[in-house]
Image 1 (cartoon, rainbow, N blue to C red):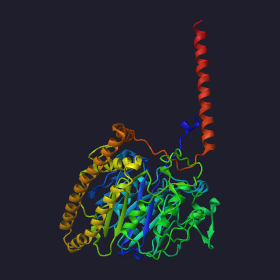
Image 2: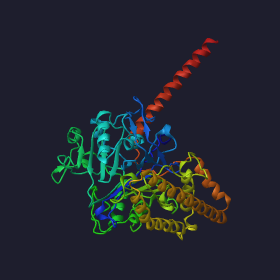
Image 3: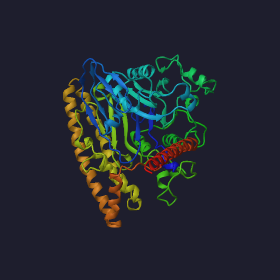
Image 4: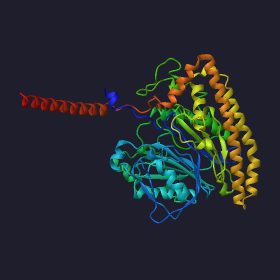
Length: 541
């Protein structure tokens, strides 16, 4: 009964990364994120037009009432929103017309003692609003950090979050730690980072105001909460603000660090993991894509979602399993994106390229987009919350579901191989398109038309190809297991079933207390009803 009354929370298990340009094969900066929540959760890719706002216009987050006074102009930007704005816009990632990009957010949460001293604010800013508020209203990445910091100081934060904001000068990494505390750094060009749902900032130099932005009471709040900790003789933010490291975060940060540098000096059972790491190898865009597709390859572990397929039962996260771990590429991934920032590309193109895999990239391609496109392909804009054959997300979701449920039929890896072949082709073609955009730097309208035409034609061709892949996969499953097998996939899509893997420990004390409270209330109600009935019976005698 208690389990019905108080179900487990479902994790918001995003994983972000940054690779500085000094570590890449082509000198580009790479950063991005997998957006994770649950299967069967449609996403769109859209262009939000530049707007002139009237005095008094506000952005209002319908999920919690947070509001933001809009300036005179909201810049044009690209976004990857949810299809249920009444439950939150969640624009998540994109470029604006000034060449600023953002990925928001990787969810995280402060420990209980910190939250008692500086609790999250119910109507403060949350992930659902961050991209919509910041991206259309800043001209530089630093302005984005400063705007967000100002909002957190004055209105508070509804939750903890990690945000990456970039422009042609580099990437800022920001942590919103508690209700009013935050810290951000300009990420160095000679480091890389992988960060799932926990805080990672360690020792920062608050006096280096060119490269650091932090709240005034960052250290004081930790001292007042009794959680202040030092590492190497200096205040360590993550160790002071974090709860104990969750197993699902441990598995993703460790495997991510090792994926980008197999020789990294980290062990799975390390007490904690620092944000920044180095490697002597040069990393490529393909390495970044492989990171977001990582399912613990090259380790002694297996993906947690494979546990049931192996006949080992449904994963139980009340305790860590010695073999099965939660991977970066998991069934909860709804889309994955990579920003490839290039010094030679004009700011009006975004200063780089947005590589988007709608749906999990496990069996779906990353397509490249410039910031100056005027529209997106219709399949990216289908708003359905259940399977829709005209939707990019739902098409990819179907392909991924078929491959995941019937791995024996797709063990040759032909779908993944075909997708990677297409990606390699686009990477090779990109230099010519970059050259064209550079040549049109003084003709922004023409550059925009060219970028839009290119992206529309490519998307149309790829979507048709994905439908062919889907049809072949469905035919293969039906041929082997009958039409019932396909119907089961369809039913799971229509039911909006959430992923059953539980990634947060169940709090039995809270559940027990809550359960006793509910049972007490029920008991009182029953007593009162019986008493009323008795009085009614007496009155009729």
